[in-house]
Structure formats: C-alpha cells, structure tokens
Length: 206
Image (cartoon, rainbow, N blue to C red; front, side):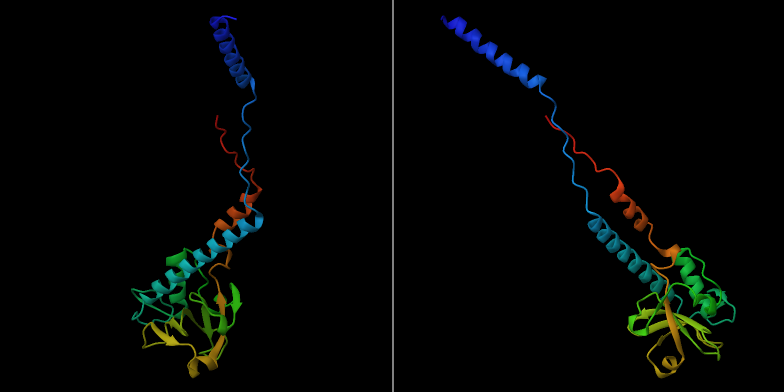
C-alpha cells in the first residue's frame, strides 16, 4: 500500500470519528440537588430570628431617643407629650409601621404571653398602677430595665423591673415582634414556598 493510500485511510478514520461524535446526543443537563425541606426551614427560621432581633433593637433605640419627653395624659406625640400607651404606640408606629391599640389594656391582648424570666428587648411589660390590671405599659430594654412614661409631672424614663414597686404590680408581658401577623417577616412564607419549586438545571457544557 502506497504512503498516499495510508495517509487517506488515516484521514478517513479521523473524519469518521468526528462524525460519530457529532451524531452523539448532547450532554444531559445535570440537576442541581434542591435543598431539603429541613435545610430550607432551618435557614428560614434563622433569617426570621435575625430580622426579629433587628426590629427589637430598632424599637428599643427609638424608645431611648424619647427619654426626657414630658408626660401628658392622652398624649401621643413627643412634641406635645406622651402617656404610657402613647409612647408604646408611637414607637411601634415609627419603627414597624404597625398601629397598636391606644390603651394598655387593649395592648395586653396582643401577641404571645411571656414570663418575666423569658423577657427579651422589645417585649411589652404591663403593670397595675391605677388599681386595675394592665393599667400601665412599657417597653422592655434588656438587663431588667424597661422604658415608660410614668405619670403627671414626670418624663419618659428607664426603670428597673425587678425593683420591689414594679415586681408587686407586674401583670405580665407580651411579645409582638415576630409573633403578631403584621410583624412576621415575609421571608417566612417565601421560604416555605421555595422547596416546592422545580429544581434549577445546570447549563450543559460541550
């Protein structure tokens, strides 16, 4: 066999091999394994907790800016004075956009009940200071302290909740942040729906 015939035979073999490769089915896209429901739920809970903590910090910071505002019965604006429920309502409105009921008694029906030993910043604390339950309300700051508008002749101040006066009059506490529907992060519903979506496909590469 001449060298030319051998060369063309080699070229033909290469061309044949290329034709086989060209006719082969394209690479199948590989599915990216979706996160398990447990993983998605875990991430959601973590994100929700961070969001709730950020809101609670914003509430306490906003409330502390009102220290020194004079007490005014029925007051709902810092410029003209605040009473106890007016203080709480104002702070929540400014930080969360949620309008709470006007009276301490009505506020005491919202959210989840919290024991004194389980208090967290942003929780509402209630007291009997006028000879009927839930007649006074403040915002818990942490470290056994809460902020409130006490009474006529006084100003918005920070008090110690484990002092004898407040312990005797403590009516309970309620947690609104992360519990009240209007204050539950929207990411919760989004993450619950996410695992039900079809998994994304990775792009096929030649």
